[in-house]
Image 1 (cartoon, rainbow, N blue to C red):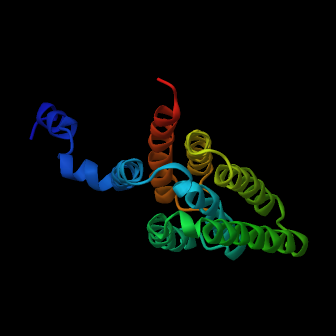
Image 2: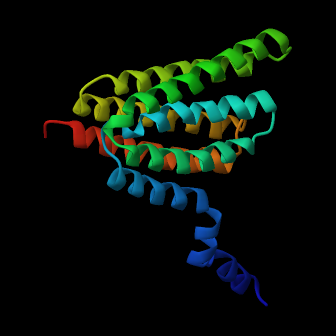
Image 3: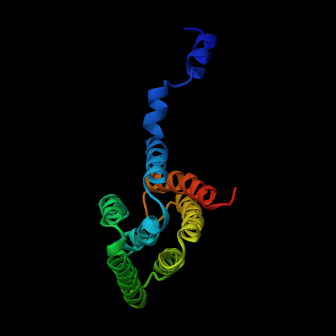
Length: 197
């Protein structure tokens, strides 16, 4: 084989299925973003925005990055169930979501006091406070405002994911990629839906 044949063979692009297998987190994130935008409205997504940061705290507290996937699997059950409960159960959903966020913050504070490596848990607690506050406010405002707030929260969380992807800490890179590709398009779609245009 000549050098020219070797260069040509090496320059051939990978088959589409190999590229898809390498980028499965992005493809899965886009699919879930599509389903989220077409299947939920208003404050229905508030538990998602509030509870995703809980997963980051769990991953950091346990020092097991893979635990974020358990939280996401639970959210795939919790969010559809809360959407089907209807408005008569909205207070229960709000109370449970706020309770989980506050409990996670309390555990974070305890770990922060007891752990030597405090910076990372502090960062995750700040993220939980920011995104949890957005979600809690979305529970109590009119639907159009809630959709706008949740859109902003999702975009913010997508940027949070990109930061974690770059740093390579707390959660697996595949998760950070999946979540960023889910959050940012879904957030933009919600802002578009909420807008006056």
